[in-house]
Structures are given as C-alpha cells and as structure tokens.
Amino acid sequence: MNLFGEFFREGFFHIVDTGALDHILFILAVIAIYNISEWKKILWVITSFTIAHSVSLALSVVDIINIPSKTVELLIAFTICYTCIENIFFSSHNRYRVYITGFFGLIHGLGFSAALKSLFSAADLNLFETLLPFNLGIECGQLVIITCIMIIFFVLYKYLKIRPVVVNLAISIPVLLFSFYWMYDRLLAILN
Image 1: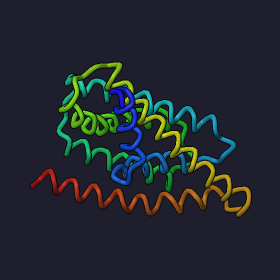
Image 2 (image 1 turned 90 degrees about the vertical axis):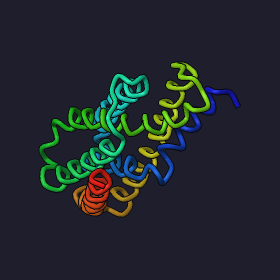
Image 3 (image 1 turned 135 degrees about the vertical axis):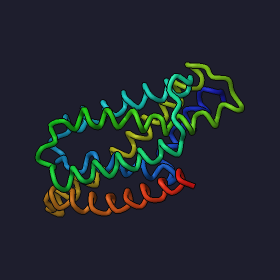
Image 4 (image 1 turned 45 degrees about the vertical axis):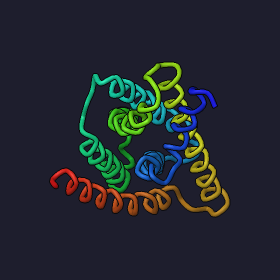
C-alpha cells in the first residue's frame, strides 16, 4: 500500500475506532439537539468543526502549537461536558453553536495530531503523503459516523415517533456522565 493510502486508512480508523469514543460522543452530542430537517445547521456546525480541527492538526504536527497530550485530553473531555450541558439546559439558545463547535474543533485537532505524530516514526512529514491523507481519512470516518447517527435519528423521529427533545436528553445525559468521568480521570493523570 502506498503512503497516501496508509495514512488515509490510519486517519479513518483512528476516528471510527472505539479508542476514539470521546470524539464520537462529541460529534453525537453536537448534533443531538437538531432535527433531521435542520440538516443545513448540522452541515455548518460540522464544517466549522472540520475546518478548525484540520488547522490545529496541521499546526500541531509541524510544532507551531505544542500542548501536552494529557492537557489536550482533559480539554477534549471538557468540550464534551460543555456541549452536553448546553444541550440539556440551553438547547433553544444554540445560535452560537457553529462558533463554539469550531473553537472546540481546534482542541480536538490537537488530539488527532498526537495519533498522527506517533505514525511519523516510520515516515517523513509530507503534506501530500501523510498529513493530507490522514486528515481526509478522519473526515471520511466522521462522515460515516454522522451518516449513521442521522439514519438512527430518522428512524427514531419518523417511525418510532420519538420527539427530538427526548432523543437529545437520552443522548446528552449519559454522554455528560462519561465526560465527567473522563475529566476526573484525565485530571488525575495530569496531577500524578
């Protein structure tokens, strides 16, 4: 397999792997407040996340930004916690979600860069053979995740007649509990 394909595959499986559960749950929490008919809002929010994490991924890989990975992991848990709290208590006031999610994308990109940097031991950093395909793989994996979530939402709303507010709470409350655990666990890792 060529280098481009190898890094694309690594990016794709990095995001769809259970080891990336925090990223998957963040995406789930971000779109939990939306109805299927609000697909344009979902598109804008996910695009802001994608652009932001692509920028911070690139800046981190070339060492322009360098934040310890334990700190980044704690911040990722915080982004999930904040998103869930907003979903539960302020879901009707989400007009800034595109900007907040974009900002959080910067943090998630730093998390993705740790995975990419670990792959560089066997390959030289090359924009077109390593960084670009890794990021494209992440984006494709993210699209698969979002598509699966939207299909499930469609079935819940259309066929099971579950109201979007119920789906939002059924997602946001358990994900919030996970994020509390992750923040606690990751804070302990920093302090030890």
